[in-house]
Figure (cartoon, one colour):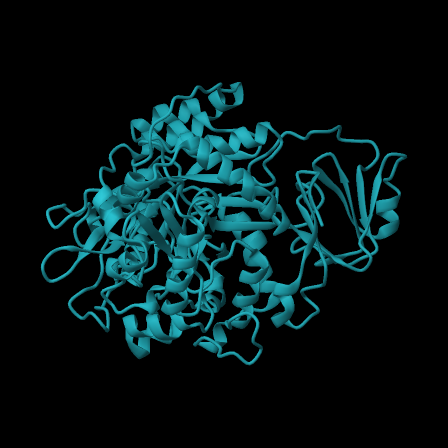
Length: 605
């Protein structure tokens, strides 16, 4: 499912220069020195403050009125009107009070009964990888016959060059996965490769394997975790699992440059604004060489050109050994990338893979592969060492944990770090949490670890009903994605789509994710099956909170974004209908008709 953080040094290097601001030097200089020496460096516990872009007094620049305002936080959940000056909310309350702040140049936004609410905070997503992986042919189709027919048509319409695409589902194939033979029949003489919808595997034809030099004698990048599936003779089948192996093949066929990544991202940014996204946690970028900062700085480039419609909390990703340099690397990025909208202060740990490829790390064996519990790139001792070192340096961790053993080991590591290191305001998170053991669920509240869910995966779709139950068996398979349990136990929950990764359908749109978090059903069918346990369905308020204040807290931004309150940044969206007053099954039909980030309108339908 979560795909990115492992995308290791397969990208071609490119030269670049950086201009470091005085703010960046002051913010990061002390941290890198102390962190490299493994002495505690305590990051600010308050949410990040941004310099206002306008005077602190004078008339409002915008007044939103004549419609319901859902604040999510603050003194009251509902208000009549909002006033904005510069990048800051200066009034939340009655309409008369907002209008009293108007001047001759104030822009009045007549809501006409539409809902005003905070912009969405995506607690886990991959803009660069989404823009990259979803280019080409869309294979989110009903069955293998439709997929093969679509590939054949696409190949005829594009008669030269490699063929690529995204979106095939693991339940279309037997446990051993897809075969190159099916592709060779359609595309025998040029390379073709297609990313699975979970982002953890690839389907390639013989020509692509040949170009990448993959044969029966090719060693696997990480045996039993990132590898080339093989037949009984030892020949590669064309099924490639986990990112090290996937990227080695992709870059042999169609190398990608940072410039190309920047173009792909910029093409997607207006779509993000149209989806109401005003803040993202980028849970891992594909590095250029070993340099993750080269890609993250493309956000800064977009910001400088006024093209970035959301603020970015980026991460430094750890996917494999060595781990001794992690604190020095994240400290350097934390110092070097520190603008108004973009910063790096979280360590993303890729703890395992996915259930679809049997690479999620389980406690008990897979029901349909009883000799396997999956795996992790790290031993338990290495887990504890990594988390303790990162914690001592004052950084938070964000763990990819599809398997329940990964979640347990991460919680163990965090608990040990809390005991060993001085007290501080920790904002650690564990993501995906397909299945969590009953004994581990209360530990999220106890350790103040945010449970980060990709709610869009929790529908009763064929992947969940067939694939997950097959992997886990009936008992565990009917206890997946238990979001409400964490909340009921006093824990914190955040939402993020993990785009482009998915179980059945891929989306970057928070409104769709929110709907599934409420219904646990496939979108579009009111009478569709509800995913067990049915009492894990959230209320509308809980789901919205997870995609606003819940994620803002996770990212240390709750004092600036996530709710409509005086003094917070003006990150606001206008929805075509009041999603708190309609049938939740209709939420996905809602349009974001206006989006404002940092006091600037970024989208208008």
